[in-house]
Length: 396
Ligand code: ADP
Image (cartoon, rainbow, N blue to C red; front, side, top):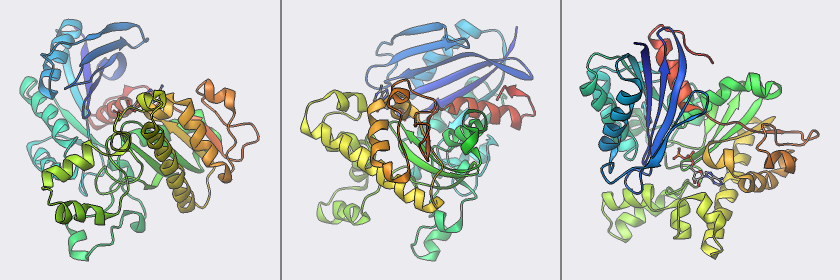
């Protein structure tokens, strides 16, 4: 019977997982996800070599985070049952001011993390529910929380600042930044994949359902587009990105909406979905002939290019641009349009390389090199989990 380690990444409508085999050094044995939780749940899994282990629609029994975890637990027992579970690593979206590094979960840590729920109402409760469920199912198994905010700690004071009254800011009102596990992974592979820019000034663009940019100087985060919560910056699937806070006041005072209604508008009904009235999914919008879908895509590109310009100013110019996550890794059109809007920075796209998804998608003469690098948040969590427990973990 072999030892296993598990990585769980509970998103707003998905539960991603990885299973690693081994005691000291870990080898990827399975990677998969349940997506469409709450709408049309579907399970997919592959082994470490990419061969299919499972693929199919799930019935109505999988209708929320807990039932998704129940299904996954059954599948894991069937395929990996009998072995010992050494550790479970989790993605936790918000670590607040306190958690600047991955940490072993204790009741006190969990209590701290629950206090951050209002700062990430969509994701934090789901992350913590999975930790609770594992605590019940596998009592005594070490659990490690890896935060989306940690990688951004250490930014210059001006980048973290929110210019409100000092006494409010002392209570933790500051810019935190998110998608840190993704950016940390990208920074960790740059020396191998794109050595020419690894030590330079790079903008990484994590464009998925949630979307943000990170300014990297020598592999360290110096600024990013997400702030106190995961609402700032770029236009996202259902979140608006940066907006005049006066709009929020108007929703309360002018329209008399409740806090719950405003939260739902900002987290679930805005962004690409709000503009188009059709879908939050970039594939649907790119395939649509509706003017509102086109406007949503235009705004997504406009906002991304505008924020790339802002971060380029922070860095004093850029040497490289990296695309990652669902849209960044897969949409040739969005990459082409963002690069076209960023020509002034010295970006010259290689059309064929873009269609081939890179990894390098800029021409040989482009002053700024542009890359497509698939992210691996689960791999990053596995590395942190092993390291905290003094194990070798997966190969980097
Ligand atoms: P998250 O992990 O934040 O839920 P992902 O990183 O999986 O999101 O990205 C989801 C987004 O990626 C969706 O908007 C989806 O439409 C988009 N996407 C995936 N494949 C493509 C593609 N081939 N072209 C355009 N968009 C795509």
